[in-house]
Amino acid sequence: KKVTPNATLVVDMGHAQTNVTVFKLSSEAEPQQEEDDTNNDDSDTQKETHHKDVGRRRRPMEIVASACHQSLGAGSVDIQLWKYFTSTLPAFAAGCSTTIEPSSKNGQRLLDACQKLKHLLSQLPEGKVTVENIVHDQDVPMSCTRSTLVELCQSEQSALSTLIEGTLNEAAMEYENENGNGDGDDGPTPMVIDSIEILGGGCRIPMFQNVIHQALKNSNVILMGSSSSSNSSKEEMTLSRSLDDTSVALGAAVLGDTSTTTLDNNTQPWVRMKNVPSTTNSFFENDNSSSSPPDRDEYRQQLFHEEERMAAIDEEIARKGEIRNKMEAHVLEMRSAKYGKHASLLPDGTVLDEHLQEVDDWLFSEESDNATLQDIQSKLDSTVAKTNDMCSTYLQAVKDEEDAKDREMEAEAQQAQAEAAAAAAAGGGDEEEAEDHDNRRLPKKRRMEIVMKNKSEANELFSDGNYRHAAARYTKALTHCAKFVDLNPDDLEEVKGVKLSLNLNLALAYFKLEKLEQSLRVCNEALELDDKSVKALYRRATVFYEKKRWDDATKDLKKALNVAPEDKA
Image (cartoon, rainbow, N blue to C red; front, top):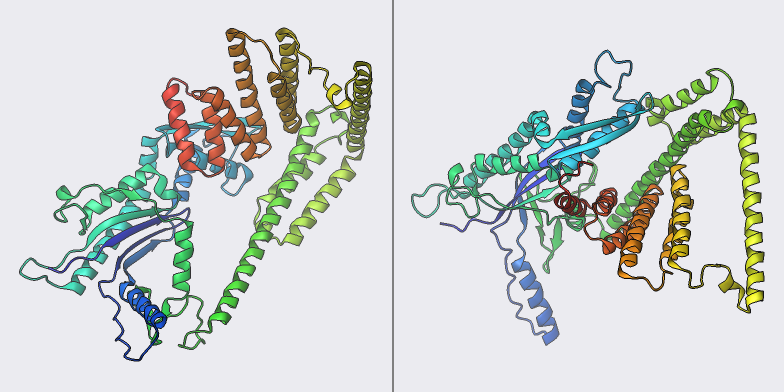
């Protein structure tokens, strides 16, 4: 029998669509060029031999079968969870005063929570999340198990199985038709799948990984290590994730120019696709282009301009998002004002609430989705201008209060500087050393009082949402923790516990400020103090989650679960 070429299955399940492809390396080696009888010097001969070896080794990749499902992806799971909770939770049930519409702000909050819950269920058998401020400004807890998710997504699993089995069976048939019978009466030469590559967020979900394994068993192909295509003889193969962004970039470059020139100016395709002419030069060709390859420099310039255009689109989208965030922050700030110190200065009646609700509705409207950058900026400017006109007395009172606080802080700073200078002059030291009166060898009790005072102030600042100043206070408290002297073993353990608590609080403050690198650094410092701290592991997993480092997040969550399996938080 002929040796069966290696075949690979690629399953790419993104957020909104899924692609399945079977490819193999062609069994045809590129023809070796005839020896050149002309007299060349040694260097020329070595260069030409090198080119011959490269051409002889290169084996083009051939796409045997490929299929796409344009409405199946990881986002389908979010939708199923969304439907499940809107129909089962009492807060969202039919007849409730609160109706959750898919295109509304509350609908988006619920969908975001469903996405987080999906990620948790990809790592743990049970997950819990809380949707904040969704029903009458109240939080709604949600929970789900992995088995429930499997039941909810039966149609998605069936669609993926059908897609994979159909592609594999088509590839097997194509291969058998192409290769015919082997040397004898053993029948057609079968296709052997020797590797499986998975990509996309959908393939990280365990139930879809199980579907891939089962679809392989149900198909007509042989898996590497199995004796036949029957289900009973097929061994489960490892799902590989070796394809990364570099692979995508390389593949795009290859497909962008699917031919390479040999020494005799003949071209050989890198990628062969069924029912696609091998003379295809680029996916950027139009109907008026000639069949001859484009000028390489001109082609590169076209690609460069196309990349610039896409970068400009990305920048505009990011800018739109920033302006929308400012608008939403403005709405939230003014809504919370009625609970603040100067609430009595706000307009009477519902005029302010109606104004803010109109802006909120616009943010989640079709008009907003289709708005240009200039339209969104104009909406923000008009919103702020109307609010300033409507709440001028309130805003002036807030500004006067902030100015008074700034003057008070400046006076305190000047007084502290003067006291430090006086202490330096009296003690004969320099002013920089005297700025902190606590550099002396203070007793442990006095030093701990300073630490706890800073921690208490930081906690109060954090509770008020002043995360930046809270982080500064936590940092100052940690600085004082480094100044303890002459501690006995019990005191060392006490200080260690205080430092762990401060690091956990500081990590959370940085996380609230969206300073993920600083938060990660502080989490690592907390784990250096106690590598089994469940709070530190969970907090670092949260940071990894936001940084899209899914595997690292999973490791920390599993370790936390092993340390405290009874902790349901």
